[in-house]
Amino acid sequence: METSKRRVYTKKIRSAVLTAVRKKGVCAAAKEHGVPQSCVSRWAKTADVRRDGPAPRRQEAPRSPRDDAPAKAPRAEATKARRAEQPHVAKIYVTPPRSAS
Image (cartoon, rainbow, N blue to C red; front, side):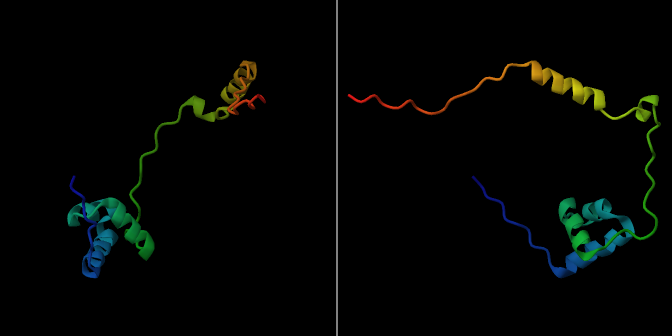
């Protein structure tokens, strides 16, 4: 079985990647330099580096009428009621004492 070595990145590579993070973002910088996204994300967080300019806007999903309802309260109560109905089975994992012979 072959073991994998941990990659070692020089300070020059890290600084180049972090510069790309400022311009393009974490995902694009990781792809450009061939470095795992998790590494680039951790480096950026440690160095407190973020993408320059406004963050890309994400489109919000259209809201449905159900979104205004209370979240999961009735379902939680029903689950508790079902659990109360189920019998509790006690399990004993202790070996019985030996009889005196």
